[in-house]
Length: 245
Image 1 (cartoon, rainbow, N blue to C red):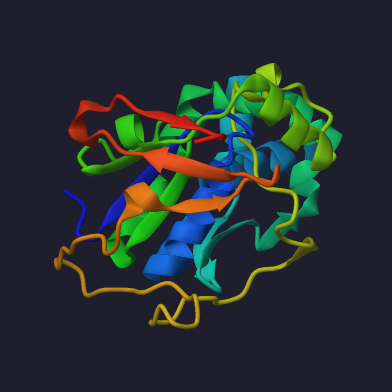
Image 2: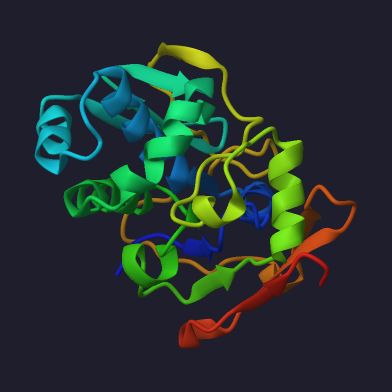
C-alpha cells in the first residue's frame, strides 16, 4: 500500500478533470500529477528523434537509452527527458496525432506507471489521467470519475485550440494548454511544504493520512461558466459526474 495519500481522478478527455485535480491539489496542499503530460512527453521525444511510433521495439530502445526525470515544481509534477521539458511542444499536432499510439505500447505504459507510483513515495498526490484508480493505484480509497457531455467536451477542446476530435482524444488524455512554456533544461525542483502557498506537501515515508476536506463537494470552473463536480463512489469504482452537476 502507498505510504502517502493518493487521490485518483479519472475521466475522458476534456471532461474537466485537470481543473478539478489541480484545484483539489492546491486546496489540500498535495502534489498535482498530470499523467497525460508524461505520455505526451514520450511521444514528443519519439517523434523528434524520427522513430516510428508504430515500431514498439524501436520506441522502447529509444527510451532505454534516454534519461527520464520525474520531479516537482510549484506544487505540480514535472517530467523531463534527457534534461529537457518539452513544454508547449506537448500540444503540437504531431504529438496530438501520435500520443494514443504511444500509449497503447504496453512497455511504455508499464514504465510510466512505475514512475507515477514513485511520486507517492514522497508526496501526498492528486493524480489525474486514465486508469489511475484501477491500474496505477487500485488500493487507494479516494477515486473520482469526472465526466461531461460530448457537446461540452467538444466546446472545451475548441476553446483550447485543440483540433483533435473528442472521440479520438478519448484514446488517451493530454495536458491542458495553459501549462508550461517552451522546452528548457531541467534542474532540481522539489516541492516545499505547506498548503498555504499552494505548494506540495511531502510527508515522511511510512506515514499515512486522511484526505482533508470534502472532496465530494469540490467544484472548479469548467470553462463553460458552470462548475465541474466529482462524485465519489468509494471502492466500488463506479463513478458518475456531470459538467452540469
